[in-house]
Image (cartoon, rainbow, N blue to C red; front, side):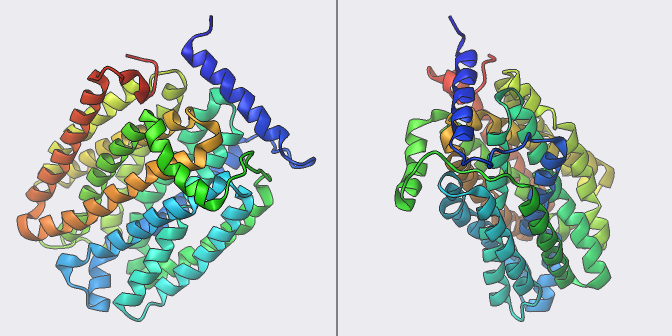
Amino acid sequence: MRSGAEARDAKEGDERLTEVAARPAGDVAPTLSRAVTALFAVACGLAVANVYFAQPLLDSMARDLGLRPSLVGIVVTVTQVGYGLGLLLVVPLGDLVERRRLVAVQMSLSVLALVVVGLAPSGAVLLMGLAVVGLLAVVIQVLVAFAATLAAPAERGRVVGGVTSGVVIGILMARTVAGFLSDLAGWRSVYLVSAGATLVLVVALVRVLPRERATKHLSYSALLRSVFTLFVEEPVLRVRAVLALLMFAAFSTLWTPMVLLLGAPPFSLSHSQVGLFGLAGVAGALAASRAGRLADRGWGNWTTRIGLVVLLLSWWPVLLARESLWALGVGIVALDLAIQALHVTNQSELYAVRPEARSRLVAGYMVFYSIGSGAGSITSTLVFAHAGWSGVVIQGAAISAVALLFWTFTRASPRSDVTGGVDS
């Protein structure tokens, strides 16, 4: 008699073969090589960087466009709102239309939106442009789901981990690149350079992405309704989505107000210097790249537990930032290691549930990610304005503690087996 994991892998393999068989002759996708996986990761990294470029530039944007410092976090929040709408309205299309075409259209429109942001004459135009940038940046999720579909079941965690590493590195390197370009040519140059890089990637992706189409034929309205239905039908989605909300609220709580701390006395760091802290986060993200392999081996729950503990503990060195920038660096590495491990594990567990609905599953999951990121950004800047860095750390630690308690509670419930993974 087969174990649950074996039966699940067999079912996934059958459904993957069905997807391939459903393609027209001549459209069978090539093997997902490491080079193509790397291109997926680069494309995802740039797309998500477009969402996070603003964080180290908030003070410059506020001065240039007359935004109040206490409310400048709305720049990040508006982008996240657009991202959330894109997750609900655009990502599910990956289960309905050809993903290759969907990717090309989204990224081409992103080029135009980035130019609008780079040339924005007022705060209102800036906010509208960033909302559209966020809406289109959900191409990340289309690409991740695409990669998961092309990968063999036994390697899905590794592939998702590789592509998702590009996402996390993109988030972190966004600060370094934005800081460098801003000091060199002003904050607007960040978005104009990104527009050019995005255009280059559109051409590269169109050349290498295989043609793929979903086997399900639903109307658009039915497709959107099914996203909500999946929350009812799949407990693993509910649990992992709540974790996404909490952990990315903690993530934004650290990164959004950090430029306000480091850019002011006694540090008075330049944008380039603040951006270098993103390199510390990259080290943590790379260290967590094995999380997908652990999920492939059935250690998803163990990775989740350890990741949440590390996330909570990371706030202690972050608290010491005023006394030691080295301590801040250690805290950043620990926090980003935890976030990356949790994010890869969450997605690996979701993709194993309903292969025919991967785009919709990740759309539902990432809506909670977007809500958490937006809420963490706007509240952390308000807290910093009224309670300083200590207040920010208390907020981040409290959110992390709630995430750990939530996971502990779900694992202790009678239906704990549905939260993903086969380890205890």
